[in-house]
Image (cartoon, rainbow, N blue to C red; front, top):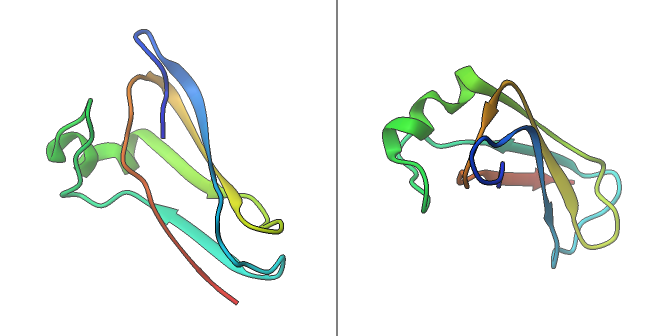
Length: 86
């Protein structure tokens, strides 16, 4: 999830493609506390849920979109995980 360079943004989205997923599938996204990214440490990821919320769009064809929204301006790339079930 990329909020862009400083000063960043309150919103970001990431499109997940290359899946075989039905439009009725249920999808979920989250941040793992021990994940890292090129811009953020495991400690940063541990507190991400207090800074931003993640939601997933309805699956279409071969994927879906993950949306992030924060009341704060965040910057850089964060590692986000997802899972789905039909």
